[in-house]
Length: 245
Image 1 (spheres, rainbow, N blue to C red):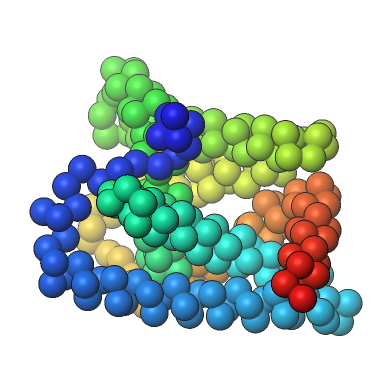
Image 2 (image 1 turned 90 degrees about the horizontal axis):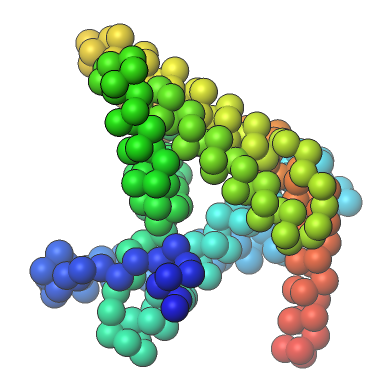
């Protein structure tokens, strides 16, 4: 039931894919990684005590980082519990998105991997096959990528609506549509240049992450504040703090 309802996937052969020595090394690295992210999340939560002194755009940026760190830590805890109780490994949901070197790298290989793996066979590939017949294989990825991001935007609008019953404004959809357009331009540019010219990852990495965070603060995060999900979260944190005391 859980596998059918949630975007999770069991690794088919984790022992073969991750031999014991490598697995132990990755486990130690992963633990340190999550400890660092946990500390960063704690710092973000602590900074909310001074929220009235922080610029609104910086607050939105903190919300964006908060969402990412919370999701990754929460999902990692869930994967650890599944590993302990059932002895199976779950496929990771994220792959260090802050190391992305392009939008294609970010959306295809690093961010929300299980959702990407669901969207690929259900939206991207059918559109790709149809587009290949109509406009040819070379440019078929363009409408395929755009349609995938449109569907993703609509689904996120539905999620926000069901969370707080607030009428959608379209900002979240436009966030994904805008990224879909930018990604198709990136793909087209790569095809046009045919790998003849490219910037190093040390340059494209910060540009990519900055672009994602900037557009997220501009179009995605405002829906959180408009739906008062941040207020609700603060109230729940206060209740948890009261219980711990």
